[in-house]
Image 1 (cartoon, rainbow, N blue to C red):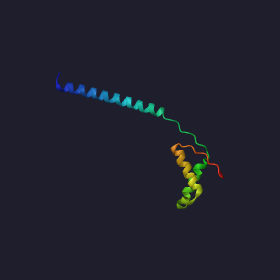
Image 2 (cartoon, rainbow, N blue to C red):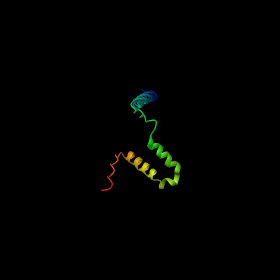
Image 3 (cartoon, rainbow, N blue to C red):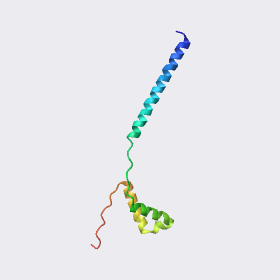
Image 4 (cartoon, one colour):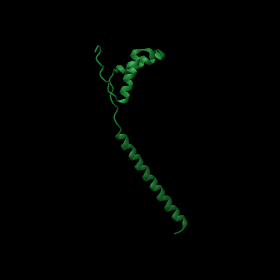
Length: 92
């Protein structure tokens, strides 16, 4: 066998491997997309989201607004996965 024939066989083998690897990778990506989690349906009205928007519109004044402080605390707790502790009874 001469060198040109070996070079052609090597090139054909290389192209065949590249095509096979590409086909496998494309199939894997389709499988991953098919298994992608579905989007959670959120309620039409979210009071926390509405409070966040209100506080955003207040700008710097929101730092002194007790309702904004409550909204931010609830947002932080929801983000961190915390449950709200029951309020301590007053007057004891």
